[in-house]
Length: 55
View 1 (spheres, rainbow, N blue to C red):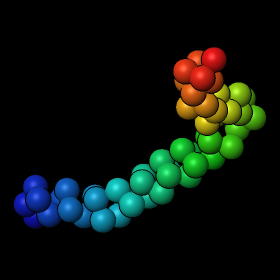
View 2 (cartoon, rainbow, N blue to C red; view 1 turned 180 degrees about the horizontal axis):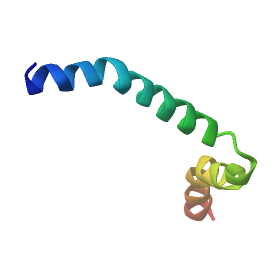
View 3 (cartoon, rainbow, N blue to C red; view 1 turned 30 degrees about the horizontal axis):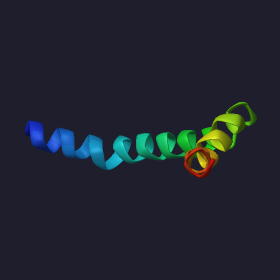
């Protein structure tokens, strides 16, 4: 078996599993209560700049 075939077999089997784990981890991380304030700040930061211009 060539090196290409070994890497392709790895990507077809374990690569898919790793991508699924990373996807679930990143998706779950966004719903943690500890990052709620950071998300709220990021979501409303565009309006802070608008208030500074009008004020």
